[in-house]
Length: 356
Image (cartoon, rainbow, N blue to C red):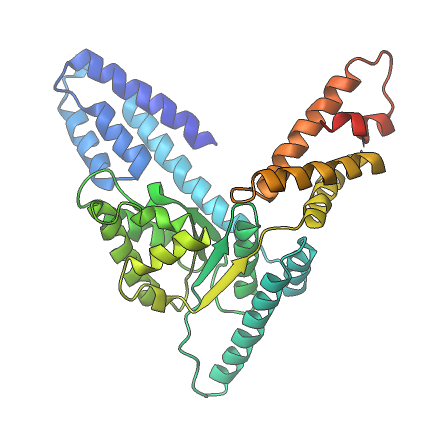
């Protein structure tokens, strides 16, 4: 991203000033607060301190870089929201959901939710009492089971039926919800909620917010602010929390009233061997690769062995992505030994020799 380049240059310039001004200078610290926490107070403090430096000791470059960085962040944020909230038709979104391998129970629950909320909308327009159910959801299951993909589709579906004003998607983790300094966490959560209004805020590994619940006051502050937002903005915000089933159960126990803010709990089961094999062949097709039958059989057997070996910690779709990268690397090494022109069909084909 453009903003990352400006960030690096801004940090370099702040460190140059610190080196020039000595131990009492804290431009580097202020810049990190700005870039890592989007701390508005730090922006004002930096500008104020910079204005007090003697002219011969400074250049205008740091203010120029600060403006470029903040501008790039704003533009990228707007671009991200516009991309996420593109006007995909409802039928196209249903097709996207149904094209996902496996997840039959997930697809059915999402379809039921859409039907329910569409009818509630019609009731409201007819002057009838509407349901008091919130739109917030919890996605429970192991990594690599398409929780993030489904969350994106749900946000766009809710926009398509008029439940959300934008339908954009904001993904967050513990670092996005907890600040470095006391008193800044609530501000950071509010800022994130404001960005997410009108769309979906997806918090993966949500339990990490409260992993140190008994000693982590920052985590408790974050969760308190988040719980309040779940109620205050329920009419135009969907918060989806996700993570391992057992850890998410502890997460809901960490704050009285938190679980009651979520009406929908969807379990994402691990993929079967056949489903994982289908995901691999689909990945090949999507990336202009073909795969011979013997290679497919070898992959099926490999997956069976891996699943037995890593039963409790298998990463599902993530494992398939890594496997695809390894196998295409093997294919590249094999083809690099050929002489002369390489035919298009040969460049596309994955053979059993590429599967280790």
